[in-house]
Amino acid sequence: MTSARLTIDPHFSVGPINRRIFGSFVEHLGRCVYDGIYEPGHPTADDEGFRQDVIDLVKELGVSTIRYPGGNFVSGFRWEDSVGPREKRPRRLDLAWHSTETNEIGLHEFASWLDKVDSELMLAVNLGTRGPLEALDLLEYSNIAGGSALADQRIANGRTDAFGVKMWCLGNEMDGPWQLGHRSADDYGKIASQTAKAMRQLDPSVELVVCGSSSAHMPTFGEWERVVLTHTYDDVDYISCHAYYEEKNGDLGSFLASAVDMDHFIESVVATADHVKAVVGSDKTIDISFDEWNVWYIERFHNVDKIEGIDNWPVAPRLLEDVYSVADAVVFGSLMISMLKHADRVTSASLAQLVNVIAPIMTEPGGPAWRQATFFPFALTSQLATGRALEVKLEAPTYETEVYGVVPLVDAVATHDAETGRAAVFLVNRSQGEPVSVTIDVSALGEITVLDAQTLADDDVYAKNTLDEPERVALRANDSAELAEGQLTIVLPAVSWTAVSLGA
Ligand code: AHR
Image (cartoon, rainbow, N blue to C red; front, side, top):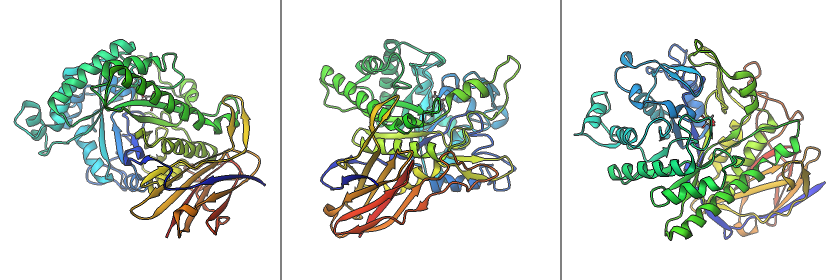
C-alpha cells in the first residue's frame, strides 16, 4: 500500500488558532435568510420566526463570527431600511441578485438570532454606492451607548445596549467588475483609508478588514493588494481573501488539489502585505480575513440560476443551492487544513455561506433541515482544532495534476492544546484509486492515546445528502487507527478526509 509519514511535535508551532477562523457568512441572497434561518409559520419557528432546527444545526456546526449582510448585496444596501418598525420598512430591488429585499430581517433581528446561535457579528459597510458618512452612521447606530441621534434611534427601536460590533468589512469585492460601484485599487484604497480613519475616530476599538482580491485569479491580483495596502496600511487590521473552487471538465485530480491554490493565495498575500509593511516602515503586521471560501459551482449560477427581466424581482428565490458530494467535502476539508497551516496569518475566516446558499445546512419550507456533506469537516475541525496549529513535516508521494502540476497525494496539519493536553491531526488523501497508510510520529506528545478517528469517504465519491436521502453521507469511525510506541498508523481511503483526536 502507498505510504506517507509525518511528525507531530508541539515545538513546531505555526501559531495560535484564532476561533474567528471558524466563522461563516449570512448574506441577503436567495433563501439564506428568508426560508433559511427565518421562516415564521414553520413548525419549529420560535416567537421571532427563527427556525429552531436551523439554530440547533448552526450550534452543532460550531461557527464563531458571522459576516453580514453581504457580499455583493451590501454594495446596494441602505442599512437604515432594515431598522425601525417593520411595517414601515421599504421593499427594495437588490441589483446584485435581481431579487426583492423586504427588509423584514435587519440588524436588530439578526443580532437577536446571533445571540441564539452564540456567534459574533461581523458587519460589512457599503463602499460600493455609499461612502464614509453612511459607514459612520451605521457605526454610531451600532456601537454608541446613547445620547446621540442615531444611538438614541437604536434605543427607540428597542435595543438599549449597543451592539458593540468589533469586526467591520470596508465594502465587498471592490476589485470585481460585477460589484456595484467597482473601483480601481487606487480609488478604493483612498476611500477605504478615509472610511477607516473616520470609523476609528468614532470607535478606536473596531477591527477593520480592507478588501483584497475576490480571487487569486483576478487580473489585478497582487497589484491590487499592494496598492490598496499602500493607502490603508496604518488604518486597517486585515486584508480579505476570497476563493471558491469547483470541479471543472471532469478533472477530479486538479479539483482535489484546490488547497494547493489556497496555500499559494495566502502566501502571496502575506508576502505582499509584508512588502508594504517594509516600504511604509510599519511595526504592525496585517493579517488575513479569509472571509469567503467554499466549493461553489459558479458556472451553474451563470447558466441556470441567473434571474433576469425588468419585471421579475422575486423574494427569496432558490439561488446558488449547490448540493455537495463527498468529493466536494474532501476538498472543503483540505481548504480548512490550508487555513490551519497558515494560522499565524489567517486569523479570521468566513465559510460562505451558512444556510441554503452554497451552504453546509439546507432547509425545505415547512419541512426538514439537514446537513450537507461539507457540514462534517467544518463541525469536526471547529470542535477539535484548539490551541496552536503545528507544522507536520510531511513525507508523501506525489501525483500530477493538469492545473497545479505535481502535488502531494496527502496533506495534513496538526493542532495541540497545551491547556487540555489534547491534540488533533487532520488529513486528506487525494488519491482517486488507492488508500494511503500514514505513519505519524507522535512521540513528542508524551503519554497519549487515540480518542477518536473519523473519516469522510464513500465508494461513490459523488454521493450527496438530499431532501429525500438526508443521511446518505456521514462521517464513519476509522478503525484502522493504531498507536504503539509513539507511532500512530492509520489508513486513509481513496478521496477521503480524516480527523484524529488524541488525548491523555
Ligand atoms: O457568496 C456569494 C457571493 O460571492 C458574494 O455575494 C460575493 O461577495 C462573492 O462574489
